[in-house]
Length: 191
Image 1 (tube, helix red, strand yellow):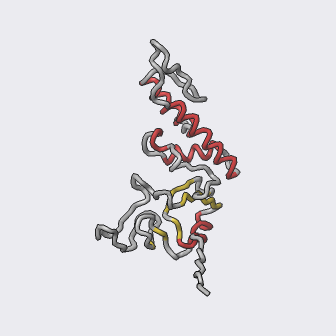
Image 2 (cartoon, rainbow, N blue to C red):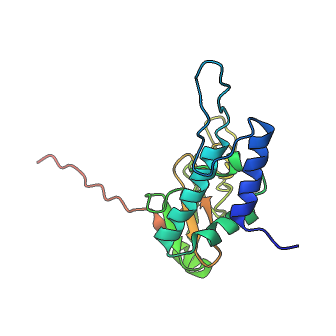
Image 3 (tube, rainbow, N blue to C red):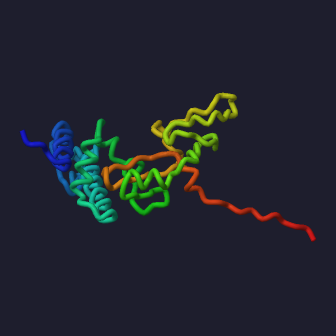
């Protein structure tokens, strides 16, 4: 049996959900009549998600000089849960935002990160793990911080999404200490 592409796999999943509902599918986004008397409209927005995913894969392809189908193939190979939850801004952020870094290779990324550790977004301590705080810092409730970037609230907007072109993969991590900007504070003098 021939392996299906990421586009085909996603399309089949969306069509299945559409058929379980209203029986509609439009790759250009939901176009089912809504809010009209006597018409049961589209409430699920599956087609809008499909369109968003394809547009985001094309965005990645354009910004990274990659084939967008290869990007989508990898996303679908990595996806282990429902597409409506998997495909979202936090998992596939726009390339070019301030919290996104792109590398040609994993090796290049690791060299850039160095060995200074990672800043936990909750306690502010330095963790040796980019995913789970192991700084040993105590929180206000006297509990040792063990924040995880892969939890519900992820990085609290304080982490970074790293994308490695050689693997066609990206993920959110705590911000590496090596990437923090140095802030110089000058003392005010009373003369």
